Structure formats: structure tokens, C-alpha cells
Amino acid sequence: MGYAIIAIFGVFLLQGLIMDLQRTDQIPFSEFEKQLDEGNIERVTVGSETLDGIYSEPVDGKTEFVTRRVQGDIVDQLEEAGVEYDGKVETDFWTGMLSWIIPLGIFFALWYFVIRRMMQQGGPGGQLMQIGKSNARVSYEQDTGTSFEDVAGIDEAREELEELVAFLKNPQGYGRLGAKVPKGVLLAGPPGTGKTLVARAMAGEAAVPFFYINGSEFVQMFVGVGAARVRDLFKQANEHAPAIIFIDELDALGAARNSQPGMAGGGNDEKEQTLHQLLVELDGFDPKSGLLVLGATNRAEILDPALLRAGRFDRHVTVPRPDKKGRIDILGVHARKVKLADGVNFEAIARLTAGFSGADLENLVNEAALLATRREADAVEQVDFTAAIERLVAGSEKKNRPMSEEERVRVAYHELGHAYLGLALPGADPVQKVSIVPRSIGALGYTLQRPIGDRFLMTRAELIDKITVLLGGRAAEAVFFEDISTGAADDLQKVTQMARAVVAQYGMTDTLGLIAYEDGQQTQGGLPQALRGRDHGDETARLIDETARKIVDDAYDRAKGMIETARSRIDTAAQRLLEEETLSESDLRSQLAPEPAT
Ligand code: ADP
Ligand code: MG
Ligand code: ZN
Image (cartoon, rainbow, N blue to C red):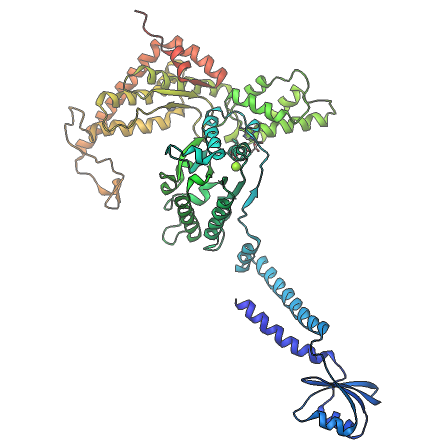
């Protein structure tokens, strides 16, 4: 506003100036009167403020003049002097235009110059321009031109996503019987596994428009801008419903509000306001209109719980790194774009690329095609792929590098140790799947257990069984390898916590009795446990440690014993797991737990 007012004043000022400057033949009114008296004026055009006219005889080499009109009856004077006179059409279009354009031009040039300088200095002007350039772009596509054909290796997520597509195709029909209509769906998985791709594919499959916005682009904006943009986004999408709104990198926006180190106190207002607006919009729209909000993140665990509540992003779809079969399929999708030689073996390539994401594989195909081009081959051959893998693996960071064969074998046995005990022990949660595809940084493999519904109570036997399952990984390493590894660190942390709870919280041992020595609360009265001090003496503390240790030791011996007896079954299962990278519940049952033959 300030700028606009100053600019308008400036324009008026300059306009006046220019009007005057335009005419070099301006004369004072007294001079005009003098010439009039001398009879040297031939014609005059009378304007409301000026008089222009022509001299009979040139004065100072000029034949024309202009003067400001002074009060008085000019017409009488002119009549008296016998001068020809005329009125004037006041708006002189070109003069008017010029007197506007020039000052405006000057102002814009100045403004541009100043802003540029400020941007270079990184001052507040930098942000000023970002608003203008709309840093957080909402992109809109009527048709993404992508379909599920373009996405491979996510079979588990696919079914759920297809259901959502069915909803988008017929939002009214979906809610016909009062079924709860989906609103927000969170796609969670490591980078490059195809979250963005699958979101676009859903829009393509459902033939609905796709609104895209990236959470990380909100972060540097002025307070209020992000919120306004979110509001606008939902408004537009609503007008185009059924539609998909896709919020990429949701974690940049929706990280839990107090999880920002160094942000204590003031916090990041912009982010909070934007997040808040997002929550308002999520609550506000009627899902029956056919609007579906998809969010993508690779760090679902840091999201603000408010975002994940019912009616918001309450459906979670995991998009994991592909296993071997998945990688073969993804290679198939991307190899369509290059000319392949006969005899390229995707299976062998997939075997060599454990841990690669979909994006890595796309990159691999491209790299292989480049190598083939460079050696002027007619088609991309197996050798190109092998060379490309070597190149990519050497160039990638450690955390993305596929595991070595040795590590894979160890991880396979470790996970099968968990899985076998999970199947064999009645108190453990059923095992759903075992995988040696790295799921996140640090976790090299995983054993997925399905929690047995909502549980309110756990018995002592169940707790001990759970502890035993957690120790299964380390136990398997001890049984099958000469040495043990660091792979069990996370397991041991959980085990320790549980064993201590058995002793000091739940009062489940005779040694320590029914006293609750610890409350299991991390903080209380604002104080972390470590600072609160404890209510028991050193002797008791030592006893708690010892008793917990005894529980763990016993469970470990039990785990080792059980694994020992199942040695050969675990060996066979490990071969299959190494081959296929994931084993489902039924695979595991048939491999690991043959019913006792009686
Ligand atoms: P994310 O959003 O999960 O980080 P993207 O969807 O941006 O990953 O993936 C980047 C690219 O990698 C995609 O455009 C696609 O070409 C390729 N890609 C990733 N995952 C897959 C997949 N499952 N199937 C086919 N291509 C994939
Ligand atoms: Mg993405
Ligand atoms: Zn483990």
C-alpha cells in the first residue's frame, strides 16, 4: 500500500512537471500581454489553463508560444485586439499517455533496481520477491497421463490404492450405504520408492485432476502466505472435484510441533499456521464431494499426531523398497523405454541390486543405456547393466549401497531367528512377513509381526515370550555364525526395557515382590526420570538389575535351544529368503513350523 501511494503521488508530481517541460516556447503572461498590445499575436487557442498561439512576427526565433492563463476576461482582451481566437479540446490524448507512461516507467525501473539490490544482499527484499514469484507453486494437471502400468513392485499397496480409485470414480455411490469415505491417505516409504508416481497414477486411473503442492516450499515464506495458499488450494480443488490433492514431503510441514530442536519458544510461525490451516481444511471438506487428499513422507514417525487423527490422514499405505520380484517388475517398466538386446536377464540384475529403490532402478536402466550408446552397440546388453550397477554402487553413499553377500546371509538368519520364535511361541504376535530388504536407514531387515488386536493386559508368560522373540535374532547369529554382530542393538534395547518393567513395574518376580519401583513414565512433573531420583536404595537397584538380567539370560538360553533344534529348517528357509528377499506368513509356516508328526 505504501509503495502504491508514493508511486501515485510521484506520478502526479512528475506529470505536472512534464506538462511544463514539454513546451520550450513558454512565455510569461505579461510577455503575452505585451505582445498583444504590440499587435504581434495572430491567433490564440484558449484552454482552461493555458493559451497557445501564433505570433505574427517571430519573437526570439519562435513562431509559437504558450502561456498560463491568468484570471481576467481574456476573450474581451482578444476581441479588443482583433485577434483570431478559438476554444480547445482539453484532452490531448498523446500528451496524457506520455505523461503517464514515462513516470510510471521510471518508477518501475527504480523499484526493480532497489529490489534486485536487496535480493542480492539477502535482505528482506529477497522474501518480498518470493511472494511475487509464488515459491510454493500449486501445480494442476487435468490429466497426469500416468497409470498403474507405470508403477511396479508395490503389490501390497496396490489393492488399497485401487479401492481409493474406485471411490474417486464414484464418490456418491461409495458412501451410499453410509460407509466411511476416505479423506486423507498417507503414503509412507523411503525416498524414490514411487510415492509421487503412484499418486499421479491414481489420478490418471481415476481420470480426475491432480493438484500438487510440496510441503518443503512453505518453509521459508512469510507468515500467512502458506495458510492462504492452502486455503486456495482446497478451494480450487473443491471446484474441480472429484480430484486428488497431493501434498508431497508432508513432514516438512507437519513435523510434530515440539520436535524442532532449537525452535523452542517462538517456533516457526509460518509452518504452524500453514499446518493449522491444513488441519482446518482437512476437517472442513465433505469427502462425499470426491476430494481425496494424499500425503507423502519418508518420515511418518515424526509427523504431528494431530495430522494423523481420524478424519485426517488416517489411512496409511506403506510403499516399501522393492524386493527381488518387485525389482524385476520395475526393471520391466523402465526397460520399455530402451532398446534391449535379447538375453538380458532381469532376474540376475535384480539379484545384484538388493536395496535399490524404484528411482535407483530407473537410473540404472538409463545408465546402462548410456554405456551401450557409448560403446556404439545396437542394443543394451547384460554387460551394460553389470557395468552400470558397479558404477552406481561405487558412486552412491554408504547407506544406499546394497549389502554385501556376507551381510545379507547374516541378516537372513537373524530375521529368521525372530520369525521362527515368533511362530513357535504362543505368547508372541503372529509373524506376517520376513524381509531382508532394508526398510530404513539402520534397519537391514525386518520381521513384521501383527499385533493381536487391541490388548489391555499381558500375562507374564506372554511378556517372556516376547522377550524371547526379540532375542531370537542374536540367538540365531550365535547358533549359525562363529561371531555375533551389532545387528541386535535395537532388539536389546527393547528387551532391556521389557525385562526391567517385568521386575520393577509389574511386580512379577518373587525376588522383588509387588513393589512398583519404577513408573515407566519418561517424564513426570516436568522432570525426566534420571533427574527425579529414585525411591529405593542402591541394594534394591542392584537387585532390579540382576533380576532383569536373569530374565533376559534365561530367555536367551531358551531362544538358542529352540533355534538349535530347528537348525535344518531355518537353513532351508534362509536359502529361500536369500533368494526371494521376502517370505510371507504362509511361506514361513510351511518352511519353519511343520506340525509335530504324531
Ligand atoms: P518418491 O516420491 O517415493 O520419492 P518418486 O515417485 O518421485 O519417488 O520416484 C521417482 C522415479 O523413480 C519415478 O518417477 C519412477 O520413474 C521411478 N520409480 C520409483 N518407484 C517406482 C516403481 N515402484 N515403479 C516404477 N518406477 C518407479
Ligand atoms: Mg516424491
Ligand atoms: Zn533383530
